Length: 130
Length: 111
Image 1 (spheres, chains in turn orange, purple):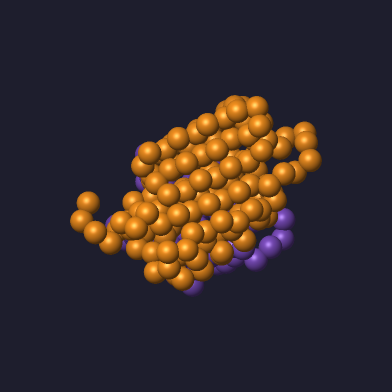
Image 2: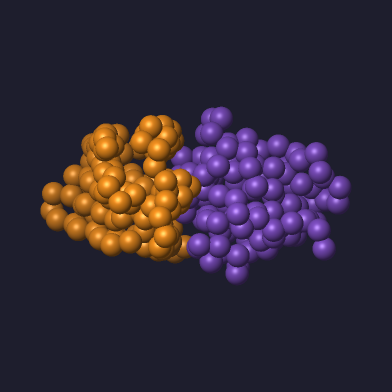
């Protein structure tokens, strides 16, 4: 099955574009996942990049890759080339965003190096007994 | 910002106090704008209901907005009730984030 592999400028306004394209793609492969949970998890990963990755620098790109596993799960990778900034606001939006991602996914991982941040996780399929 | 990602409108069900409905998607690009619109529309009322049943996307910035809106309205004397059944997108997100413990989140308006 064909994967999803696209890049977006790291801007808030792009998140709706991403969701629209992900919805179309999910439909095209007849994916059996909880669509709203999938979109929320991927959206939070990209929102992190939008908020933090390119602060004080030229806006860079966020790369989104989704691959079906063949057993109905979706493996997601969201990558930026910015610098990870720890959340600074009192309410802790980003902590909440990350907590949501962890709750919605499996095998959540975030790797940050001097050249960028890569978030990976698995969204379980709903088409088979769990 | 002005966009059509989300619409805030008076609900036809409005009987007691103000009932507003949000349709569309709420993310980091429009969350604060949606919150400002709601705040302006419920000003001066002792109670307000925000019907989120028709929301198709709600992220952590939307959740933050709802939390802050509730606080801000409460300080101004308006208690905010969120109508977000658990099988809806918003209802699911609010409960995943455990915000149903801090905010008045309801499955129905009855009782």
